[in-house]
Structures are given as C-alpha cells and as structure tokens.
Amino acid sequence: MSVTVFHYVFLATVLFSIGAYGLLSSRNAVRMLMSIELMLNAANINLVAFSSYLGNLSGQAFAAFTIAIAAAEAGVGMAILLALYRNFRTVNLREIKELRW
Amino acid sequence: MMDSLVFFIISAVVIAGAVGVVMAERIFHAVLALALALLGVAAVFVTLGAEFLAVIQVLVYAGGVVVLFLFATMLTKSDLQLKRPPRGDELAPVSAVIFAIVALFYVASSGFASLGERASVIGSVGSVGGLIFNPQAYVIPFELVGLLLLAAMVGAIFLAKKEAAK
Image (cartoon, rainbow over the protein chains, first blue to last red):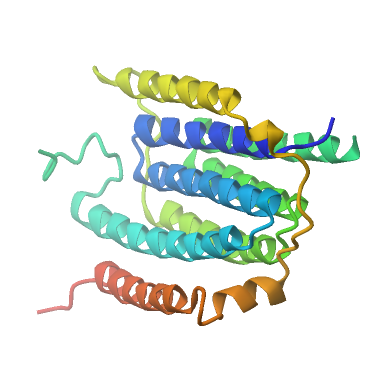
C-alpha cells in the first residue's frame, strides 16, 4: 500500500479538528493561540500535499507565506495577551468579562 | 511499504503532540507537546519532498513561535483547569466533534485517493526561491508579507510596551 494524497488530507483533517476542539474548549488564552497554530499547520500540510502530488510548486510558495503570516499572528497575539494580563491579572478567558458583548 | 510505515509513525507523532496541546493539564507541558507536533509537521514536509519548507518550519516554529509561547507561559500566571466547567461549555466540544465527523466523511468520500503517485517535484531552496522571486509569480505577495511582518513587529512592540511614566 502506497501513501496517497488522501492520507495526507486525512491527517490534516484530524489535526484541524483537534485544533478546533482546543480553540473552542480551552479557557486559557495561551492554549487558544496554540490551537490556532495547529489549525494553520493542518492547512499547510494540505497545501504542500497537493503541491507535491499535482507537481505544482505554487502550493509550497503559499505555505511559506502562511508560515510567515502565522508568525506575525503569534507575535501580535502574544502582545495582546500580555497587555490583557497587565490589565486583568489573568489569562482565563472566562474571567475577562469586559468587552465581551 | 517503507513509505507508509514512515508516514504512519510520523502521523502518530503529530497527532500525539496535537492531543497533548489540547489535553495537557499544565500549559508548559502543552507548549512542549506543541513543539513535538510542529517538528512532526516538518517531518511530514520532508516526506512530501518539501525540503525548504521543512527547514523553514523548524526555524520559524520550533525556533521562534515555541519560544514565544514559552515566554508567554512564564510571564503570565495561569491556573489549572477549573474542576467544574461552567454551564454551556459542552456546546464547544460537541460542535468540534460534529465538525470532525462531517469533514472526515467528506474527505473519505472525495476522490483524492485516485490522484495516484507523488510527482517528482522537489521543493528545494532554489526552486521555491525561484518561484517566489519570479516577477511573473509571487514577488509582490512576498513584499507585502514583508510589510505585514514589519507592521506586526511594530504593533507587537507597541502593545507589549509598558505605558510610559507620566
């Protein structure tokens, strides 16, 4: 049995679902950002898998852009988190009630 | 045969790391599990022939983003999970599981398996760099990503800086 693109898409789907579960169920802002990174990585696996199986390098170029944007997102997210922690002394999202509605 | 064995071992590592991120009781352990998952994704890129992206993945994620998460974990005080989840919290895991079932069913019923063998395209530094810096291809998106990174850096410094003493 050889590895087809289906296996990679399946792996990416499982990874994305775990990330979505963590994003929806976590109460800690750091864990939430980590779940977003998992979901972005699942998308990257899809891009590179189809790029590799279709013989088109564009997918890998887009994956490189995705990695750069994910790094920017992590940096800004972390800065927001630290500002939030300075104001509320917690990163528990259930306790931060201002600006929620 | 060898290929599929390697793929399944790497997949198991990636999934184990991802589950660790979601399930670990302490945030510090979750960050270590995230490093495992991200290195596993780099290995997945190697099996797909995307050498350049694998190197970038290790450099940017394992070297940069994970260290950023470690700093955020250590600079903030995070209590352990609450013992009793508040009301309405069951909705999130249930919707995530429903999403997983629907997505996996869609993937299983799609014709992806018939796409056949992997093409011999190799994502070396030269070929991907040639595509990104090709004026007919992606040089303008590349410059825009550079601008975005600069804006993110300035914004992050501005947000994280302590307010100046008045």
